[in-house]
Image 1: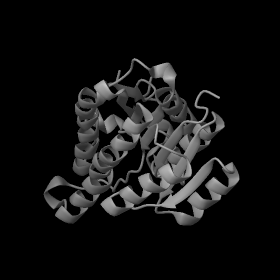
Image 2: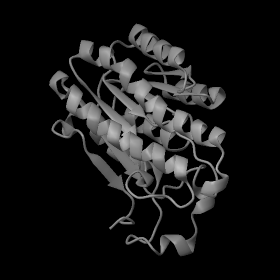
Image 3: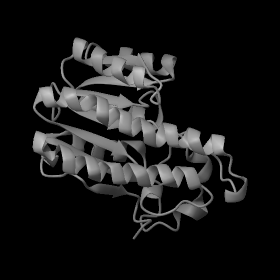
Image 4: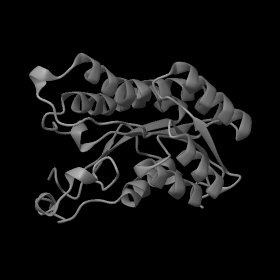
Length: 241
């Protein structure tokens, strides 16, 4: 019960790594608010977890939705202690000279702007709570460039930078801000990229699993990481070594 009674919002929590985070956080005693555009999947997870979980349909690029999520969370469970900015999208590899502005802006809106909105709108609630922890899910592509993924790379580097800027600003209020940078983690979004030849390039000779990232999320959400802020936590099986 490392997170007993902590109120936590997890965006993109209906499947993949997000669903894994939700289950681990709830298992440690947290009151978890799951948000996603995938209504059926998100509602099912909340129902399975019981009274200490709630699903709210949310478009993370919509400011009104963010205000609603924070307000509903406070009404139901109280001030927010932890925000996990997990929602994100990717698109297939595309040549830079053919990359459409529409695609670029869509990726930036979901992966970058949503993180800004999330931090902005939970901060007043965290101040009421006397502090908190913001966990921004970036990517290894926020540390090194990803091949033919200009928008994805831009968005994930931005998340890393915003994390550091916010950490410097919010530390005096007892609000910690850190980013997590997963490498190849087997999820519905990445499984088409992972093969035996690829994983042999990693020092650990295997892909990662969502639960391993979730363990890191739990650590950063808990008081065990009380002196960690403004940092990037890479979890990539040694790929970047």
